[in-house]
Image (tube, helix red, strand yellow):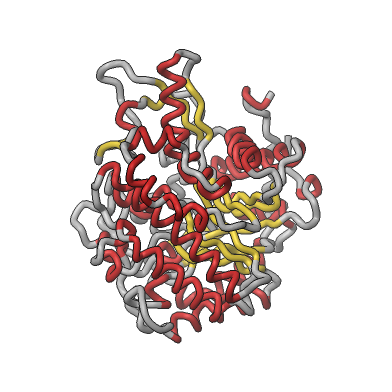
Length: 475
């Protein structure tokens, strides 16, 4: 089976995505303040290869060429994030004019190339000055985020119509404040759920600010969701799946889409009383949305582990509170270089999950991609594994539409290789290879396949896609 764009509605959005800290570089240029990732990258051992966000892809200075590259790929939308420290270096106060000017020029350049800007307000780069005051564990940070959202909407709302408040609050809270493997690198246990609540409160306040400044804007939120399956129908395995589904998915989906936290998850976390005290916030968190963005990468098959089994997490400990007693089961599926099993059908699962809670809400895949150890040989990158992954998931999008799910678009992660958070530059997700020494961009085979699919000028007719045989679970 081969994917064809003709299988999708004409208005279906095809894009690619990046994040500010991962690509921009210029970390001390034009009044930008330090972020939690600048500070975290200076902690010995925090980043796998000891790297920092400087210079990353130097996109801050090379964005015009990068936009031209997007146009050649044939994408019709570009999801980027605004760096809060560029707009408010200390997280409060007036707008830094130079920072706002950068995102305005980026947006205008996109529009000039026929590419629709999609702006994410928060992709993890909290101003360090706010973290010095307890960051997302402090309720005031949500208030500051609402003010920041209003500033950006005032500054860019005439050139940006599509807005995402937060990217993956699960990561910001549980990896940033639970396991500590992401910035700011804190380990406060179940209190990380309080950081998650303040992130969601900030989202709701951000929605209010965006609508006040730009009533006709299209506003959404992006969550990273996982298809969670029990290894068996035993009560213990079913409960393991319940716990991980609750922490990964329902803890974020339900307050946003239904206005209430799942009580079983609060009980698992031992946070029921604290959340009762802030229950009035759910009216703000559940502010009406125009769409939900979903980042999908993999699926979890989980079991209640026997004594001594490897559990969900890694060398730094559990991935998040409650995962200490859950075993990840190897399904035998191929894995990416991140070690993530490839299950395209799981993308349909998470779309169904969100649709069941809000059948009227349009859905977008706002990230989907894969890391592999790419090398340039004779001026080319033959990343067939990534090309195959990309086509498999485009086919999953088609399957979702055939089931009547309200999927409206797909954004490939990522436009180009970049700073991959705690992995530094040791993991490559891009459709475009970046030589970090020279900043040379090389479009990979996967990027040329995507261009061929989209009708972009970078299509490689000499290297057609290989038809895909369906996986066992798709047959």
